[in-house]
Length: 375
View 1: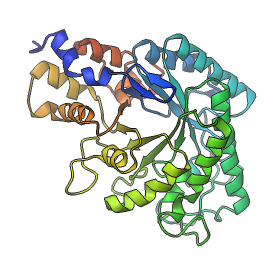
View 2 (view 1 turned 180 degrees about the vertical axis):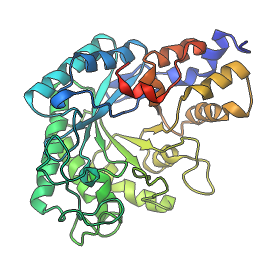
View 3 (view 1 turned 30 degrees about the horizontal axis):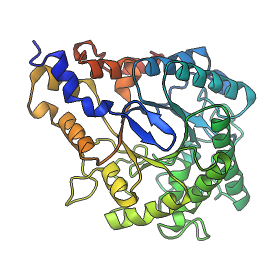
View 4 (view 1 turned 90 degrees about the vertical axis):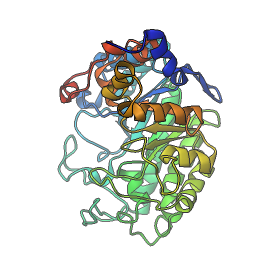
């Protein structure tokens, strides 16, 4: 039997449902749908099922939807059935997604993406296209291909800008550039995968140059008032202890050029939001990024996994729910501004509404089966 009634439950998470405004972007609340690759777009084209999938989240009170990663116009950008963000058919599909989300009262931004050298040679849908990376090195430092030429770098910068411009033209509410998790932009950030000796390599600031050029080109494509989000992380795919910055001072060096280039919001990916980023401070990655830049941040990392929320409401106060309590406390202290929810929202389109209204006993638990279809 629950120790809290629905009113008490809703009151305990009310901070998540306060409005947030960034320039012309007004969000009804602080709940963000995290980008999650779904691969349900045959030939790279999102269909009616994808539009309905996102619309359901908007109908159920998600403040901002960040789409799954979408591929910029390059043959080695990503994998099979991942949605493109180029070409008439795919862009028409995304226009329908925007229309449905807006009709339901939601806000939505696409995440634009190139996977770089995490793509294996021979991968579909373009097996002839070799993967690309700053130095041709995979995440383990092994040589796979030749380093990107300046011409290739310029072409990729332009492809990101094209995608950002199309996002604005299609009516999206902003755009997110994927600079995290060991994908192409992050491969430039990281010393292990970026061994270049030209202007795109070297020290921490030099390794941000590629991202700076991408951000600046996107800003030129969308103008001054269209929000640009950048997703960043310390960790890489399957390399969870990797760090770009070992200290706050290094993080400040890393972030400053990105701010100057035009980032409006940093989406700070960690595996567990409650873990401090550096010794001697309780601030997490999003907290440190906001402190150092003054820019709004999104926190993400195991937020809202149902047992944490259920334990708060069903068992009352106790050790089991300390993570949720930390989240609300950090939000109340303005350590970050928005909270991205991943797996919990993937399986339960009504997650936000249920949390908001105190209907926690109706939450659908996440299981691996949730990945097999679009709920």
